[in-house]
Length: 292
Image (cartoon, rainbow, N blue to C red):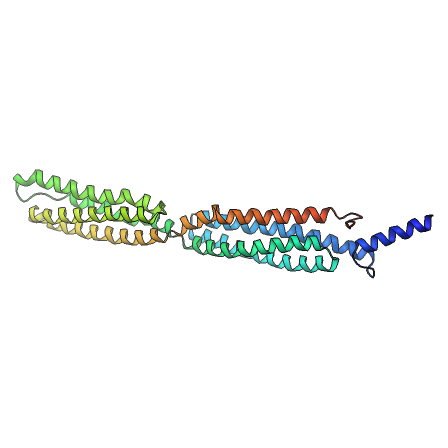
């Protein structure tokens, strides 16, 4: 009876191991290796995803580039683990786990393709660059325009009120453009951005018209101030054109939207496959070998 029971146990182990020529210790080592690879695969995937998210949210170009590099390095490590784990599972003859790994690999291929696009957009940082223009050089140019206009005096005392009104109009039109810059940078709707740009064009025309009239009514001693205001206005409008072009690229907004929508779904699918794979390997019975 004892001999019969021993024979049945040994036979069961041999069948569970999926190979009649390999000793149990070797099989157990492979199972342990498979578990380690599955765990590392999960860690590397998490690191890749987190680094990519930090790249999208980074506030500087250098940080965005560095996080993108980290994400790509972890992504490459994921790919290596997939190959190694696939080979190990195949030698063990673990078809269910191989199927789960294939499921992950397919989802990951889609994830990686989308993530490459997201990281490419993120490192461009066009919305961030547009914002820097708005609150940096463009703001400086607008303030220089204001300062130059405030020093303008009328040629005749009777034109004082008219000159004051023209200065106020010129300043107001430039401020109107500035007010529209921030929502333009943040918006992803092409039609909305187009309407904002049309409003900017109207304000731009108003600023130039007011400045032309001021040139006619200003005192000779103020002509240099009017010229300085004109130069500052030209500078501001040039920067605004650059800002609009950057904002239109919308790389930060687009990368964030892709991360929150399509990428999030693929991330969840990959995580589900990895969890199922780890659970399946953990359930392997006799010291890591599951009975079939």
